[in-house]
Length: 240
Image 1: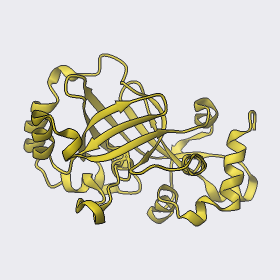
Image 2: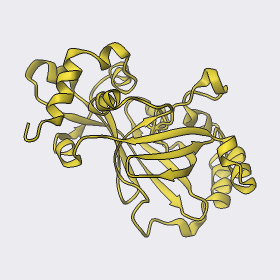
Image 3: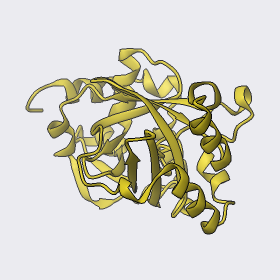
């Protein structure tokens, strides 16, 4: 998907560990160097035209993208600060909480910071995701990310992302997706979807890139802070 760390947040942004893999932290920035002609050619191989969205997307709901395992407690906190909404029609959106407003008034409000759309080829399990807008990375608009969905369960979606089209095509053709790709999991957020989405404001965010990054990639200190613990508790409380 591209819905994490620039995968999750700039095509849903898939953040990879650059130090461990040598891959860029934001894969979609690398893909931006490919020409539209190259993108189209690669897509024609792994994502046939027949992959138009005629059925519901294979997964939907609210998620937090993670390159590694996280504790349930930390997942609660991550999802409270920012999360991905994957819709059944393939559209995706990223939201962030207005933490400053919560600190002042205890009111919980979320603002949209990114949006895009994915298509899925069931035969190859390849996702092609495009960023429409990303307030935290404006130059990412129009960028494309490809990954292969390797597992879908109730609580998580597992994918393998690729830094370039040739690597993806080779892995799919050779049947070596697991060995060649970079793992990215999408963990389902623990809060009732309606309870969270009812707090989304109609307007997009006006927060700065620095403010957005602080919420998308929170420090351990922020995750364990009293205000985030209070936010988590408020989201867990029915009717709050």
